[in-house]
Length: 299
Image (cartoon, rainbow, N blue to C red; front, side, top):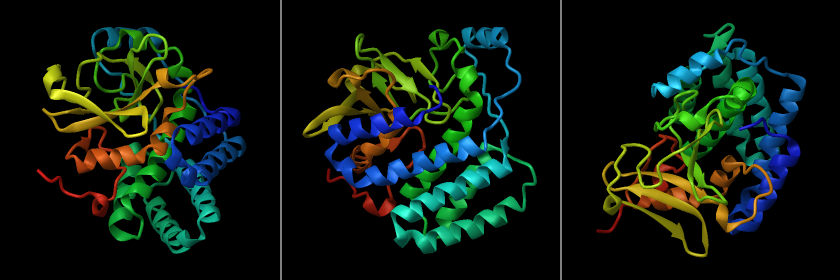
């Protein structure tokens, strides 16, 4: 998945506005954070991961071993990008003023523990503490920190992503960073099931009739549903592990070039809510729904 240029994400936002009626309310919100991230990286470019042995990586993938490449993140980059995102959110929704102030205070406390470098786990710990100790709700926290981490990862791993032999990979998790996918797509021409890492953007083909989380291949215990009026987004679920994954059927619309699945994911959070209300959990552990929105199933 290449680094996103403005024309690319703007076109995807327009496409999602046409495809998903419920996305209109979030359009300004999404546009603001993508713009903030692009402006930040123009002024603060990140260095790519300096060393990558493509031959060794291919051997690992052929052997079914994930590379697990998780670069350290500059503390200043995490802080700078997060502040830029917070400012963009505040411009779109001034009612978030008190929440943003709390975020900035907690961020200062967090950064005092890390002089130069942090890792993914450190950043996710910050997210979890913010959910517990501030007014930041789970859905907004998931969006803010998944966008933060994925933006940083894609800046640093893009050149590796482009040459990685993902065609040799048959695993469940991302072959590059080891993260668990939340979404994927059905290819326009072939209908192949492709998974995409929400974190680094790596894509790989996955067996169509198979759960990406528990490897269940019993078709009678696998299924999917769509929401009435829109069949682009499929919620694929497994009755064995009770987890779900979102697949976007690109065959339902014409895509001239690369599809930015992360924006489609944000445009269809109602599907995540529907899945949770049916008793299915996100296999990615990316919680896009607040607990108070989930209503227990009526058996």
